[in-house]
Image (tube, helix red, strand yellow):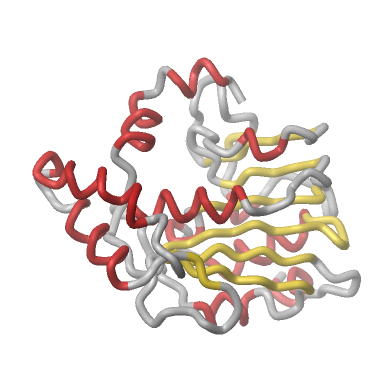
Length: 228
């Protein structure tokens, strides 16, 4: 990642100073992951690549996106047809990407295909969150949907991000005009520290901002073969 390019991006500073609860809780859950063993990493829908610092030990780090961000994007391509050989990476990351993909089943198939056996997927997606990225905002999968999509993977863990208070804060603070809700955005820093903001296992709140899924590709996974 081009660190200087990221710091000069105005969105970086808005994200840091006036974040949504969703963004704060996603970053909090990502920091809890041990990704030190990931040596070959693919970032799907990389954007400005905000999570490069999580992969300090990576020997290969590839940023893929449908549109180029100068100084960041390595490969311009569609995630539904990734230009990589089978079993190329030992970690594939897709944060806040799936909701913008018209065919999530093919996305999961492609992730499975390019992962090595034993490789890890790290995927996040919003649930109760405002529509964004129009006209490319298609999905709000439930926890059960994510479990079904990755049912052939091992060590599947899903973390829910927040509860009703976080949802209401984000729905209000992302409304227009945004400057009216700047104080609420600042308060999100405190809301993210509330006990129970991150839930694992089957204690998922019925109203949550979204999820983070991690899972390991099993040696006999056939998801991509069946979907092909």
